[in-house]
Amino acid sequence: MTERKVPDVVNQESVRREATDILAEGDLTLTDLWIEFFARGGMAGAEEFEAFIQGIMPVESTDLQILDLTLVELQSP
Image 1: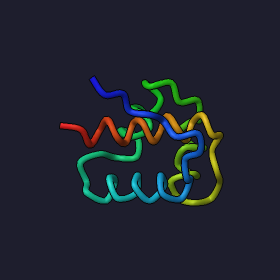
Image 2: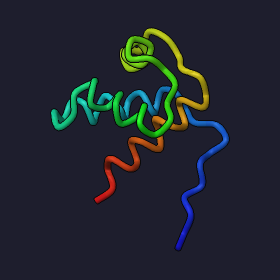
Image 3: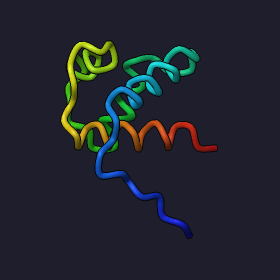
Image 4: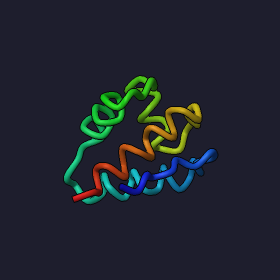
């Protein structure tokens, strides 16, 4: 089995853009995405998470990596 390597540095803007693209598809709400993120160990609260998605503030690097992983898993068949 091939392991997916988590990059040391995840680009905040690319993760934000990917998240907004997924939300724009309409299959998930912002709350749904936050719950998926939180279930995987994300520490950002719902308001902080929303502010990140809207581009108002950055999130911690650990949360960014968890959100990146969440997005990858949500797009996997």
